Every structure is written in C-alpha cells, then in structure tokens.
Image (cartoon, rainbow, N blue to C red):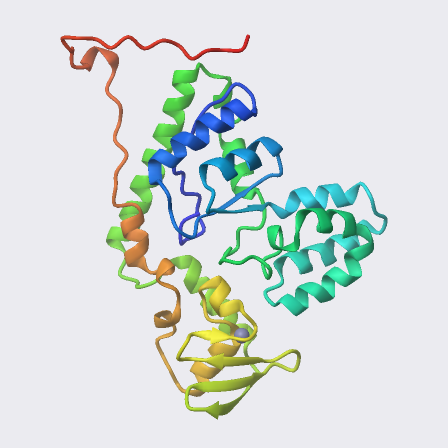
Length: 304
Ligand SMILES: [Zn+2]
C-alpha cells in the first residue's frame, strides 16, 4: 500500500500452482527488485511454502500473518461467533499491549492453542516489533484477485499485459495527483486528522512539564510528548497520524497546522516521489529492434 492506502504493486509473477517452487522463484525475483532492505515486513497467509522461502530469502525480514486466517480457524471451533469475532478484532487491532491482553484473556479459551503455536507478535498490531500501519487483512490481495478475475482466463501474455496496463494507468493517475496537488499531505492523512479532531471534542488537557501533557478522555487517557511525537495510547507512533490526545493538545495550544505532525510517509512530496517512475507501453513485436545474435530462451521446466 502507498501512503494514500492504495495498492502499490511492486512485482507480479505467475506460477502454475501455489507451490514451494513457485514461491522460491517469485521471492528470489522479488529480492532482485529491492535486495536486502532493513526493517522489511512481509505479511502473508499461513502457507508453509511461503514461510520457509521467506526465511531463506529474507532472513532479517519480519514475517507476519493476515489476521483473517487465524479468524477462519477460530470460526470452526467456537460458538457465539459474532461476539467472539468482535473480541478477536479488538485484540488484533489494539494499539496498546495491555488492551490486547485484556481482549485476549476473554478469547483465550477459543484461541489458546493457535495463539500459543503462532505467537502473538505474528498477528496482533500491539505485539508486532515494527510499525504495521493498518495492514491487518488480506483485502488488497482480494482486490487484485477480483480485478483480474476475467483476465486470468486470457492467454498468459495477455494477462501480463493486463497487469502492465493496469499499473500504467494507476501510476499515471497518481503521478498526476502528486504533480498537480497544492496540498502538503495526502487525502488519507487529511481524513484521519479530521476524524481524530472530531473524536477529541470534550477531552481535557493538563500540562505535565514543558512539552508533555496528560489528556483526559474519560477512559484510559493518554500522555502526549510533543518532543518525541509520542503518546502512551500508541496510536500516533503506530499509525503515523497524531492521535485524539495529541489533537487535543494542538487545539489547546492553538496550533493551526496539524499536517506538520503526520509521518513523512503521508506527505504529498513522498506520494509524488512514489510515482516518479512511469510505466511505459511495450511496443508490438513488429517494432522490436532486430539483434544480430539472438539468445535462445527455453521454456521453463514444467512438472507435468
Ligand atoms: Zn494518544
């Protein structure tokens, strides 16, 4: 996803089946795209074939799961599903570890075996050792699947051209938005800021010391540190957008420019540079330049 919460394809590959061979091939090519990247997080489903290859190709990456797979597993085991699903998402999406533990304790009977086996840090936002932003489900994968539902029946070259053309279109539209916009942050961050401003009405602020403030929200409160851009509710640092407590402090101090407090990932400058590289059309075969020596490319070995 880019800073505007839109799908940003890095690479696509086509395998015969979702097998170890396909994943080995795809992940080794993916590694060629960006090499060994620090702080890399890979979020996938729980297929064993992916797990082993990620460990081999990206040993320093943090590999985590879509919560949805754990939920599906839970559904087969429990009664009172609706209530349990609410609790599950509360636990998965909690920002603070003690909120997570509180929800988990109520879910424990239903989830205990899975949680023990998988590890809390592999599915919950609060226990994840890095910033996971809002990537909790496999909706982006499902969107791409839905988008290519008909195209997948085409010849493979046409399918690849469909993806290339889609990337061209997305890239151009977003490049234009970045080039023409006069705003300093993207729409996703603006909406987040508006939502948190509205939610913070009625909160009270008490200055603790210099740039630190306690904000009372009548529930669990938050201690805001403007120096380190941090709040004890964890939302500011984990989402990149100031939390309701920070918004309350800004309002109290009569700060006008809320946009200056969002993570650089949400600035229009970052968004523009994300789409600086353009995707160009591929010429028709009759336009290909003729080479003196042709390289012979053999088809891939197929198992059947
Ligand atoms: Zn907060």
